[in-house]
Each structure stands twice: as structure tokens, then as C-alpha cells.
Amino acid sequence: MNDEIEKMARDFFGYGRWDAPFWFIGLEQGGSNNEARAKAFSKLNHNGLCDCGKFHKEIGEFRLHCDKPALVPTWHKLMVLLAAFQGHALDKERLREYQRDRLGSENGETCLIDLCSLSTPTFAGAMADRPFIDERTDRIAARLRENAPSLVVMYGFAGMEYWPTIATRELVRGEIAEIGKTIFVLAPAPTAFGQTMAEWAELGRKAAELAGYCTKEANAMSPETMSIFSPKLAARFDALVQKYPVKRSALVPMLLYAQDEIGYLSDAVVAEVAARIGITELEVRNVATYYSMLRFKPAGKFNIQVCTNISCMLRGAYDVFERFQEELGVGNKGVTADGVFSLEEVECIGACCWAPAIQVNYDFHDELDANHVPGILAGYRGKARTEGSR
Ligand code: FES
Image (cartoon, rainbow, N blue to C red):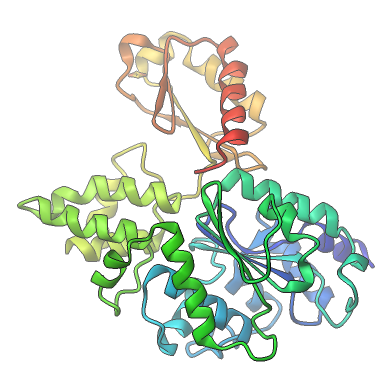
């Protein structure tokens, strides 16, 4: 195994983003050219994941993300499950669009992970013979605890030895269980003999019931609506825009709720919010860029905003900001490698009387000096370990 392939075997986990609400974990990557895949991974690697579309274009596989892509059999059933979970329409055209634009996208709502990143033909055999499998399973489990996705589908009964590490307890075949804040589904391999689309849709519906996704809400949504938001949030938005005489008044709260769920204001978020309110995407962006708490790029689980405006600056804000940079090893707008923290310098956050002040997500910390920084970080690290959710 050359160095590049070994790095992929150890560090490449799949597609999408770790803080996506919907995860699918399979046994191994498809395809066959490990060399090309390793090169693509080293070029596109972002915290062990790549954007699915960019990755496949990089290795010369254009059929999966072209205008009318062929549905990948495994992904097809996973998307059927997800659509049923979200209460969305199951027609093939929508699934094609979803595969082309959103499945495993770096800006999307899904994370596609494999226990083994080496493609099957080269490393067929017992899972236990595959390199780094135990270490990788532990790392996936740690990421899961950090991010607490809403839904995790583990598929392939050949992985029974590894699934308990990820789910934190044993599950029986076909079980759907709520563990912590996550719904786990232990499904067969989608391509296993005898699997039907109806069975996969049923798994999605049962998981939605257990998650408390109100079937009434899901049914009330137009089956033609392929919202990027969960049915719960989509229903909340439907109610919110009715509340104001002018729909536009719902814009800022909608953006905040959307950011809480998706992690940031992706192009898809901006487009859907604009459509729901009936304004242009440019108008959404013009408003959103005014507010420092709204962001257009993924942030860490805890986004630290250090005010360096005049009152804070005069009272030592730059010492505080520099200390955060030292402690975290990232600069302005940086995200730590584990995804727990991001850091940015911002304008006045309205706490001038208690300068210097910072904001971490929705929490304020004020009257700070540089010596407070390690304690603040330790507090949030502890929170990340115990709560694990975005
Ligand atoms: S100047 Fe820092 S909070 Fe206002």
C-alpha cells in the first residue's frame, strides 16, 4: 500500500459534513481504483470527508452527478428511507435530483460514511482483515457523539461486530431505536437479495414515528415540496410566515432557526427561505450579511465571536482574541480540526458596558481578560463531550 492509499485507508470516511442531521454508515466504498480515489481524497479532504459530487468528478466518474444521473442502487434505497423519514415524495425524478445535488454534499444535510474506505474488489474478505477498522470505528463513534445527528442508518449485517461501538449498545437486525438524541436504524445491506423499496420506505416512516416527527405535519406538507429543512422546521416556517401581516418580517427568525438546524446559511438555505417569503435571494443576503450571528460558512459546534470594536478594544479585546488564537491554533474565521470551535473577530455585540465581551453561540461572556480564555474553552469542551449536539 503506498503512503497516499494508506492515508486514505486510515482517514477518509466518506462524503458530506459531520454536522449533517442525517447519517448513513455502510461497510465499504464501492468502485475499484484506490489510487485515483486516494489522490482525490488528498485534494478534497475536509476533516476526513469530501463533497460527493466533486469527489466523483475528480476520479472521472461523471454518471452519478450529471443532468440525469443513474441512481446508485445503494443510495437509491437510502434516499427512499430518508424521503419517507422526512415525509417527502418518493418519485424517481426527485431522487435523481437529490443524488445529483444534495446527497453527500459538503453543504447538504447528509453524511455518507463507510467503515472501510478501500474499495471492495481489492480488499474483499472478512471485515476484521481490513486495515484500521477498529480505529476508524472509534473515530466515527466519537464524531457521532460530538454531532448527535437526528438519524443514523447503519446498514449491512456483516458489520454487527462494529455497530454497537457506534450506537453505544447492541441492536438486533432491523431494529429502530432512540438512543440519546439520535434515532438509529440497523438495516440490511440495501443491495442484499430480496430488499424492496417499500420495505425501505417503511423503515423511514417507522423511524419518523419514533423521532416524534408528527405524521400530521408531514402529511400537511405538499408531497411535491422537497424542503431542505426537517418536517418539523418546515411546519414551523409555514406557521411563522402566517403570523405577520408582511411575510418578510419572518425573515430574521427564519434565518436563525435555519442556521440552528443546518449549521450555516448555505446557498440552498438562502434559496428556500427566499422562496418561502417571496423575496429574492439577493434581498435575503442583504439582510443576513448585516447580522454577525448569521454565517455563510460552516462553523464549529461552538462559534466564538470576539468583539474588537472601540469599547472592547480599549479594554484589552485584542489580548483576549490573541489568546483564543493561541489556545485553539486557528486564526480569524478558522475552525479547529475537531470541529468543536470556530473563531471570529466581530463588531459591537451590544455589551459595551461590560467590555471586553465575547459571544459563544447564544451565550455572552463579559468583563474578560486573556486569563479567562482557557477556562471558557474548558467549559465548552466539557459541554461538547456531555451534550454532543449542535
Ligand atoms: S464595543 Fe464590544 S460590545 Fe460594544
